[in-house]
Length: 328
Ligand code: NAD
Ligand code: LMR
Image (tube, rainbow, N blue to C red; front, side):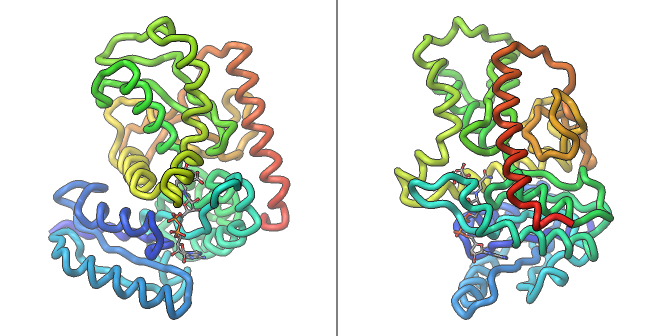
C-alpha cells in the first residue's frame, strides 16, 4: 500500500480548519489513491481540546478510506515531526473595520514559534502554506525562523485572490470559470494587491480589455482586493470554505503540478520585478510538479503596473519592519 503523506494543520477547531480537514481526508488534496495522516494542533484550552475531540469524532464518523491516521498533538514539535505538508491556519481572524495588518501583533509570535519548531523537526522536503493573516508576513516570520530549511519550502496563500478574480471575470463574460486562465495577483494579501488582467484568456483565446466596460474595469481591482472585507460584512465572519478550498488548490498544484496553468503563490522573491530578495510576495508561478515552482519572469510591465507593485512591495516592507523583533 502507498505510504500515507504526513500533513500538519494548525487551527483545526476554527472555521477554515473545519472545512479543510474534511476536504483533505476525502482525497481532494492528493487524489483518490493517496492515503493521508493528519496531525492537528489548536490552542491548549479546555474549550479547544473538547472542540478538537469533537472534530476528530466527526472525521472518524466519515469513515474516509484515505485517512490512515490522525493525532491531536500537544505541541509544535510533535505536530511537525517529519511533516511533509503543512497548513498554518491557526491565528486570529480580523473583524469588521480591521485591516489584516492589524493582526500582526496578535499573530506574529505564533509564526516565530512554529518556524523554530519546523526548523528542528520537519521533513527537509516540507512544503508550508501559511493561511493565518497577515499571511505574507507571517510566512516571512516562519521562514526566517527556520534557517535550516530551504526558503522555497515556505509560501503564503494568495490563490483565494486569484480564484476571486477568475470568478468575477467568469460572471462578467458569462463563461464557465474553468475556461478562465492567466489571471493572477501580485503582491500582498491586502487591499494593495494587484490582480492583473493583461494576459487573460478564456477558452484558450486572448481577451482584450475592450471586452469589459470601463466602469467594471475600474471596480475590478478594488472588488477583488476588498472581497475578504465584503464577506466579513455579509457573513459576520471571515471567509472559510473558500479559503480552505484555495489552500487545497495551492498545495495540490504546488506538489502535484498545475498542468501548465499560471497559478498565484506568495513566495520568497528571487529579486524578480525589483522585489527585494526574500520578501514574501504574490507572483505568477508555474508549478511543474514534485513540489517545485518557478516565478514567471520578464513579463512586460507598464508604468501603472510598476507603480502598483511598488505600493504593495512598500507595504510588505513596512510589515517586515514592524516584526523585526520576531526575526533572528
Ligand atoms: P478561527 O478563529 O475560526 O479559527 C482559528 C483557530 O486557530 C482557532 O481554533 C484557534 O483556537 C486556533 N489557534 C489560534 N492560535 C493558535 C496557535 N498558536 N496554534 C494553533 N492553533 C491556534 O479563524 P479562521 O476563520 O479559521 O481563520 C484563521 C486565519 O486565516 C485568520 O488569521 C484569518 O484571517 C486567515 N484567513 C486567511 C485567508 C487567506 O486567503 N490568506 C483567508 C481567510 C482567512
Ligand atoms: C480573506 O481574504 O477572506 C481573508 O484574508 C480574511 C480577511 O480578513 O479578509
